[in-house]
Image (cartoon, rainbow, N blue to C red):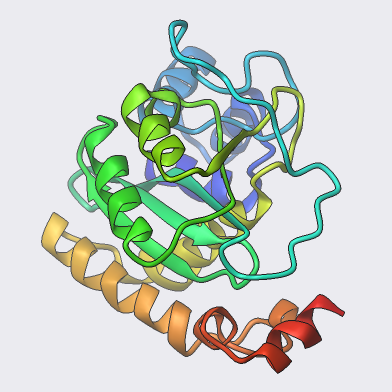
Length: 238
């Protein structure tokens, strides 16, 4: 599972066939059904266009994607969220984070040992204490289509946008965040326990928000852009 995570993070467009090929070339004795089973357990879905891209709940409402060709020009215009797999030496956890698209600022995050909706709701509630987005973008996963999650957003007057099936990079900013988290923190630290992961990720997200300079932000930090003055925001708009 750890090696699948590394291969997928490096090449998130790899499906089970290509991950199987990578593993077998490295000497793993494993079949495709086992790879598919582990990917489902880890919540990994390749981001290349294909039918049935997300595991949605048949009774949950699916909202249209609202961000095609949209120009993001200010903080709190668009937020997004996603879930990723975080490995521990003896097992694994799930991480959810909520990000502002304009500033790349991580507003909140939570760890869980299951894919229950509760840890996603906790992250959303914390984020909403800091502001309210015009649009909130998610995939079609059951956590984000649940009545609890969408109802909280709708009660704030937020429009809901969901990645459409057959689109490869609707949530690209969060995919880039996961790559940074994995390569700059998780793979280096090799966490032993939930406590280690929580402490390590807490330190990393503080670094990411406050001390990591982004080329796409004009070498400003997410915090400087998110809470910065009008001059910084106007410069990034251009």
